[in-house]
Length: 380
Image (cartoon, rainbow, N blue to C red; front, side, top):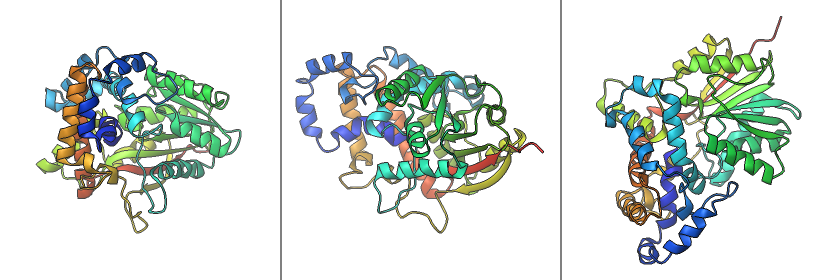
């Protein structure tokens, strides 16, 4: 999900570098006003982005220390997973919305559809696989600001309750629900998906979209879903995993996987078996496993296409020159206090992450869309 954050700065300046530098000082006063008026329902302006966080620099330093680049280990990231993920999304949420939208995930894209349409189709696919019906109560594991929740609820007529441990995202998502008049059907609850605050057997179905990859222990996480589901309920997930082509003895493979972890707030990346074994250990029956990024029906436009470095209008920002220019812009904005301290460092991490996502995908060693359908056995 690096492009969503990377795009925050780069999408705005990709075609206007010279103009941006010329007007930067002139817009400073306006930006100070816009930052004070940061709405909880609308995507923020570039100049308002993440200004609410006064200690972004400290958060960025702590986040870096949990990864190998800052001397951290997998154990450090696992033991401090909740803190690490919260810091990541505190810093990145507004960037995500500005550059990507309200649905924080990738999707395969057909040549006859827009980027937004591809995300919607990807969400509808989950709803269809679960067989959600009007009136069902559905759990969204790691719901972000509720983009998929609102889409799936509207598509099916179900009530969707999302669990999210990031207070800012919860407040933002619920504000959006109220503004759209969806607060009777959609609700974000602050809580840890490793310890769900819901009654047993209170949901008809559940799903997770590129979210349970943040779990420090998938078996424990999935066991919580199993407990919350009614017998016969389906649990469908899109998971970030390494593929069978990943070679842990290959330094380049290891480097790419670590870059993905740093750029996306992950404790570690497992293979497909790590997901399916965890589901079975939690009590589920695994019915389908399919990497939607590969196969004979693979779309012509790869999920990582927006991240690729190409000399085109839309992808120039991902080239080395585009990254360098954007980095300079972000640094100037941070110096002039138009962006909070630590933004440039976070941008550096995220650009590395974007590059490693593309590299890993092109080598076929990583996918963000392993689709798994599991079912809680019905009572006999």
